[in-house]
Length: 118
Image (cartoon, rainbow, N blue to C red; front, side, top):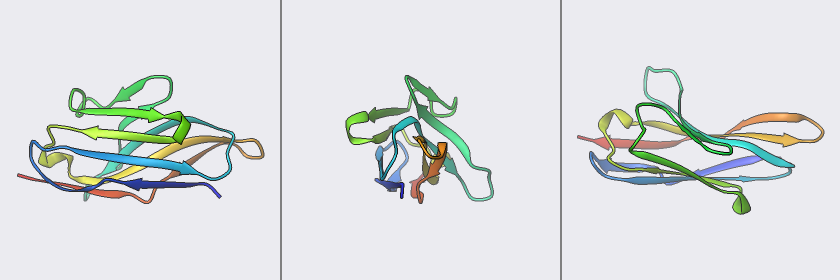
């Protein structure tokens, strides 16, 4: 059973910072890609950042957010600086894992709320 466990969300004032973490556990052979998506009320889920061999960011967060990955811990981090009210959303961890019996499978975390007050 594969699990993605997120932590680090919360309430912060505009201009502040938060750091999200997501750890993958369970039986898998390798992690191809890990990343973060977000979904604001009434909006579709959107990509924030991903990390495979390099980082990829949505234009809206470039220069403010930094994604990093610790392969030894199967963990991905999202450092969020200069937060804006429009960053308010539920943030979801995403991972593409290779499981020999299944091939490449996409998993999602349970989501963590990030609220930025003005």
